[in-house]
Length: 409
Image (cartoon, rainbow, N blue to C red; front, side, top):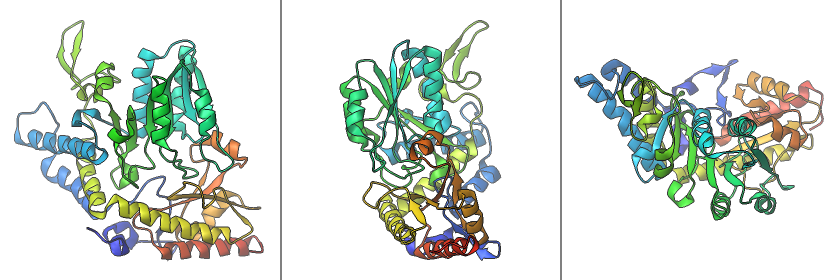
């Protein structure tokens, strides 16, 4: 098992400085840094194994295919899919969700049907369903939030009806960090014969995911938010659902036979992976999962919560700072805040001057910010390589803001 107290040494990016200061990276909800093992795996593939996959007979092609398909098996084990064939590789979580909307949705959503999303959703799990509902003349319903910014489950139950076809919900808000009770939500949806798609981009690298125990129908996430390369997305789908869905993109490699006027498609999951995929990054993604396994997701989840609590306590001690969640909520690893009289972009700029990277803006969740009645937020987000010293550096940057804007702490 890897120890978290010195794990930052395995990430070469932390050897550099920003504005003459040691890098403190607190923008993990946007993307995560990469350990040497992942970087080496990517370099190793291009240096020694680079070839196209699936159709080649020569040794390099067979090696590349083996590495690509081995990652599929590793991902299936990591989220406890029943079989590797339930794992589809895409470009990112957004494409994974669009795949479901444009295939399953095209087949099963009609006039008057209803799709439910939550008020917490990232645009990636909102806009595809908006478009589908407009095209199909279906209705989009939204689960509201409680005063604690958790999903209002009583209101959710009232939204469910015999017209509900799909429920789309995040496993963890990228703005507020709150984690809905997925098991309860999924159980209630299935009782009404509705399917459930979970956006797991923020959660899957931070705590254990068991898609069989959840009984979700689809689960989407991205490699880059869990130490892996960019350009790799994952869609889990129950096999019987994937088998019934038409291709998303068509062309090479997703066909078995092509005649002049018709074609025959490959079985699941390869019918959804048209053309040459992102072979090298998929192969390197396996190293990221192995790294997480060595650390242990239980350790990562506990570490996230300890850092979150320390940062919450630090921010909440300042009357000028408004933290948008309470320490009694389900939030973890993501901490949003605003400062009276200071725009979040100015907050991020001053933090950056101290070498501290945080995110500011709408975080691809504009409707949620309207519900929160704030034009934008600043956001700190934590991961396994962050330390309590990072929180101290963030506090130093916060004090600099008070000084620059002549604010009394």
